[in-house]
Image 1 (cartoon, rainbow, N blue to C red):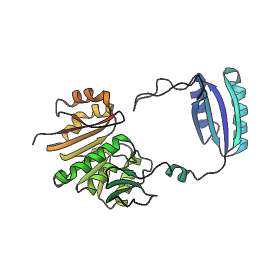
Image 2: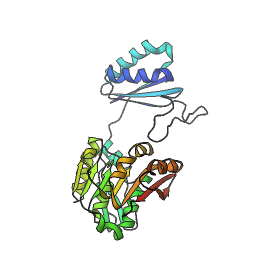
Image 3: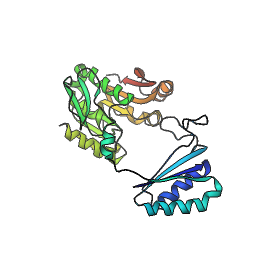
Image 4: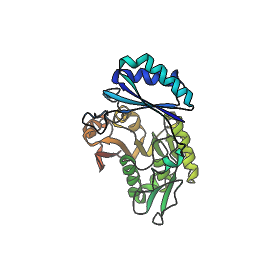
Length: 300
């Protein structure tokens, strides 16, 4: 494996990365701030779920990986010849040591305590002795490792309310299920008839596999799978899609049932309450690191 490192002005970054991937056989192309850690470093982040305000930094570093040295050299020569007068500089062309990328990725995820006795445990870790109940999780390509505040708040809500409500959870909808972690948590706490739906086929596959690995039965599929009313509806997405989905999600909540929403920043509480007001009265139930959990109950 060989790494080609190029310094490029902002206007060049998008066409450069497209050329590397589409024409020059690069295996990957990533972009970082060339001025990082210096006085000219720039923040380049949008709101969660929204695009960044600009496509690249003023000075960007483009890093491309190639399977062979000759292809990296040919790409470097061509790009410098074509764009050398437009703000492109060659910084490096070097071999990259082979690594076990799966193990490196897995090392980022450790067991997560939701309560003292309920844990999320990646499939490559052993279950901690304190975990009376544990979800064995392999996120695959889907969102949902249990580490994000929004996921932890949803899991905590399920754990805290299961003793009083699980007997009523005869049907549960996990809308935007990702890895299936919320659906599995509901099942492990006594829920039945669980539908886990997502627009991403990789998420559906991950949820199905994780359900099987935890010995629970989930009905997984695209959003069209969801039908009828559910005593518990869970949706951990983001504020914008949650706002759009308000009529659909509220329609799915059975009489006396609960709606649990996450992926919402504290400053977005009022707009979500307004969006759901025609059907349900949302309230803030939990807060972690600037994120909130909002819940509502339909009248019986």
